Image 1 (cartoon, rainbow, N blue to C red):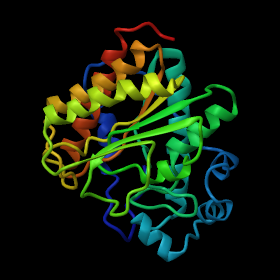
Image 2: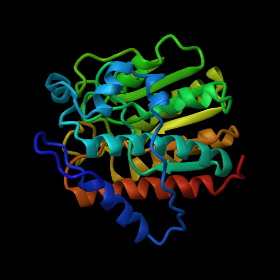
Image 3: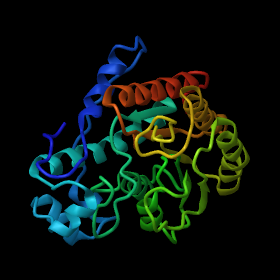
Image 4: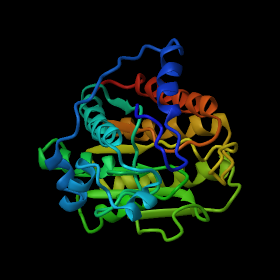
Amino acid sequence: MAPHPERGTFKFDKYYLVMEELRSSGAAITEHAPEPCPRAWLEAVHDPEYVDEVFRADVPREKERRIGFPVTEAIRDRVRHTNGGTWLASKLAMQHGYAANSAAGSHHALAETGAGYCVFNDLAVASNRLITEGDAKRIAIIDLDVHQGDGTASLTAGREDIATFSVHAEKNFPVRKARSNVDFGLPDGTTDAAYMTVLENHIPKLLDGFKPDFVFYQAGVDPHEDDKLGRLALTDEGLLERDRFVVREARTRGLAIASALGGGYGDAQQVAARHARSMVAMAEENAKFRAP
């Protein structure tokens, strides 16, 4: 956790509330604490000058405005650990089939700046590192946050070993969308059935066509009908059906999958409960399969 920034509207409350929800759920969970992400791993994806600005906690004001809060030393330390968390989740997923980072999913961060409450792009950083170290040859990033994963798409554009897939609200942030390998911009008010039809028609095609050997999943709960920043209309059960489906499609093909928390906005307790239910549902689905 980091103290509330003096400027900006982003609230960090949901992150410790998610852990409280998980601990009180009765589910059999194992907690792991990540190491901070090494600077070199970040610089392999982000511009080294920008990484240096964050490490010095001296990010220019115009970049902080794009991020949505000032980058203090506490924020710097937090984002290094959340990026380390996505890496750790990927390594654990390779052992157990599925693992979750209870934070991160910072899919708006770009090469030279953060944006949209994101400082460093953990999905791109962890993907690059897995491939660099030979743990994976081809990675699919499935992004079902209500906001398009523009940063992830931009940072991995042109790579033949990473495929990005985004289903999002077309009229939501960011105004200017990047180009993922596969994009579906949905109209406002899209409900469970229509949403699942898109996933059922296209996620199997992605996995069978691209043939990844690992999957990252941006599991934002902001497509929920009550989300403050959403615009879509998924129910509680619709979100859980979505999450079970993504894990099932990966695990049926023998692929390990790691999820990152992603977006969710509104009443912090209610949002935290959605995130916790999401992770438990994915773990339960994974339990139907043998570990890799």
